[in-house]
Image: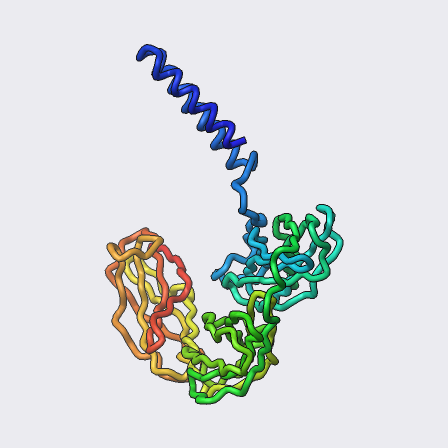
Amino acid sequence: MWVQFQTAVYYLLREFICMNRTTAIVGGIVVLIALGGLFVYANQGGFSPQGVATTTPDTTGVPGANTAGTASAVTSSNVTTTDATAIVTGSIVPNGALTSYWYEYGLTAALGAKTAAQIVGSGYSSFSAPGYIVGLSRDTTYYFRLVAENQYGRTYGAAHTLLTTHSTPAPQGGVPTSTTVSADGITKTAVNLHGQVIPNGASTQFWFEYGTTVALGNTTSLQSVGSGTAVVPAATSLSGLQPLTTYYFRLNAQNQFGTVNGGTLSFTTAGPAATPAPAVQTSNATAVGNTSATLRGSINPQGEQTTYWFEYSTDSLLGAVLLKTTPQASAGSGTAARSLSANVTGLARNTTYYARIVAQNSKGQFRGDNVTFKTK
């Protein structure tokens, strides 16, 4: 359809060039309107470029948003076929939940057969999802699509077709093997992860998954281990971990024949545990007079030396222009909530004020919710 339209536009423009200026201008406007209409039609699903197949975006688990949801799946049109096999590809975003995938295929659009399920993990990054289909008939057209599933539901990639032939030899190699090995170099915030991979004759990559539960959820970058047939060590280093925390991890490997997962192991970072952020709460003001008030709040320093002050303003947003603050004072370093207050004077009569308490320590600044009071 698109090619036919382009051809028609070409001949229209050629005719307009041969006309007088006024007619050509009017004709050009008509062509532009037609082009705009076709553009809208295309973007509303009237047609799609060849070689593109995607699912409807799932907004419940946007990658990187740290909100788990249904996985997304994209079927690729790139296929390698022989007389009885096909290597198919696609991509998956697990969206924060442990996700498996497989390919459905068949002689009609109804499909009917499927490959064995493989686990790709639970991260928020896009992962390749290769599959190897065997037992096909020579010179026969098949339909196939990628399917992904996690605890939030099942997603189907768009369908493609493939034609098996007899001219291409069967690919060499097979799915890799992956073995997770114990971690070492463990500190309060860092660790070295180890494993072993056998590529089994096909170009292979590996990555580690890790997290504070057996659902994992975090992934390292992909690294290549070549296409040999011998055991290859796999290793990576993690940093920015939480002290005195148990982490779970495993090694994954993948080549064109599929994805394999090593066993899940665990390690515990060194202590002591990290000090949590102070707990901060603003209370209602008391002793509100014509031009003065007592601002109140509470802070639990959570064991770390903490200072505090109050912010107040006639601006509900407590913006910098009108903002006033009380002098800083110590909230101590205890582990229980401590009631705090500060007297403010020089306020305007019959005026609404907004106030909040602020705590600060090595972890940063933390503000309580805003409260309001009105002078007399």
